[in-house]
Image 1 (cartoon, rainbow, N blue to C red):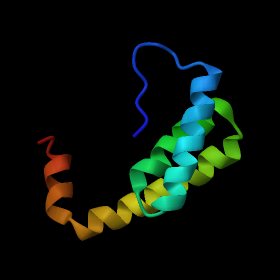
Image 2 (cartoon, rainbow, N blue to C red; image 1 turned 45 degrees about the vertical axis):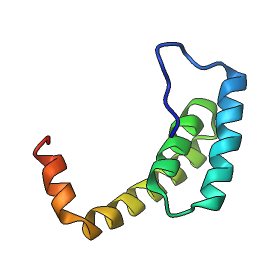
Image 3 (cartoon, rainbow, N blue to C red; image 1 turned 135 degrees about the horizontal axis):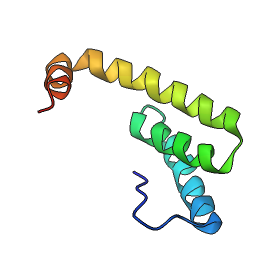
Length: 80
């Protein structure tokens, strides 16, 4: 998953992250974390429509994951 440290990523780093994440999304289209990371990169680079599309995909997949594992969801909501 894409994680930004204290240093702001430059344009080349964002392009590289985007290329890797797009490939990852192709290989694992049902992995919510990949779509979330893509949304973050698109939000920074554009186009904003792609960021919105990836955020919708993330939310849809995350909702399905939460329904499949309600105990984990309950623990997460309790902050554990």
